[in-house]
Image 1 (cartoon, rainbow, N blue to C red):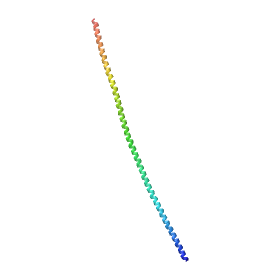
Image 2 (image 1 turned 180 degrees about the vertical axis):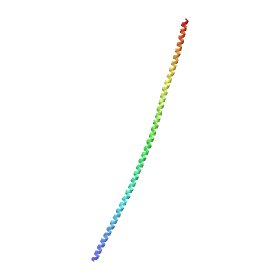
Image 3 (image 1 turned 90 degrees about the vertical axis):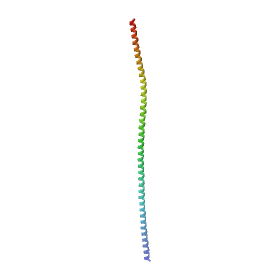
Image 4 (image 1 turned 90 degrees about the horizontal axis):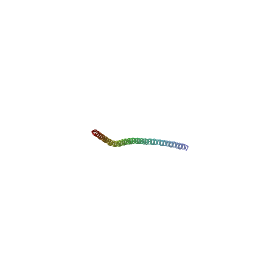
Length: 139
């Protein structure tokens, strides 16, 4: 009987040891799986973060390109408006100068006519003086 108890105890001890070994092995597998899952999750999150970063960089680049394009477009618009305003200013100045020129030309024509009238009056005066001198000398 004693032998049977010893065998039984040794069987229990072996079973206990075997079950503990199995539990440790299962625990090790579970820990390994957790580590594997964590590594996969970490790699996945890293991939997602890289994609977001790339998308953000691409978005920023697109914004910069669009901003530069708008800047160029508005500069072209500004230069065009400046040229057009210069054309309008030049046209107005030309019109004003031509108007002044017309007034001056009319005044010059009036002065020319006045000069002609003055010359005619002087020639008439000379004629009258000569006729008076001739009439005085005749008498």
